[in-house]
Image (cartoon, rainbow, N blue to C red; front, side, top):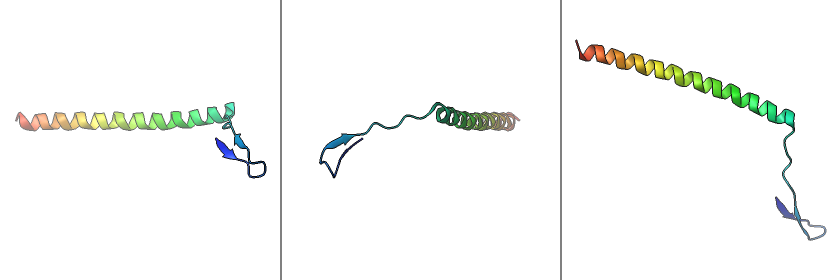
Amino acid sequence: MRFKDEVTGKVVTIKPTEKTPEEKIAALVEENQLLKVQNKALSDRADFIEDVIAEIATQVYQ
């Protein structure tokens, strides 16, 4: 990130601060929980769609 220092008039570059290992771990734990919930939701939806297709097939072939 660059900005102009109003006092000296110089352009100053600031490097973004790195996250601490604890912050990185916390973010990864949170992301992991979210991904697990998303995976379960997708699995449940796939099971539901499979059941719907099976029900439609039984109705079609009666």
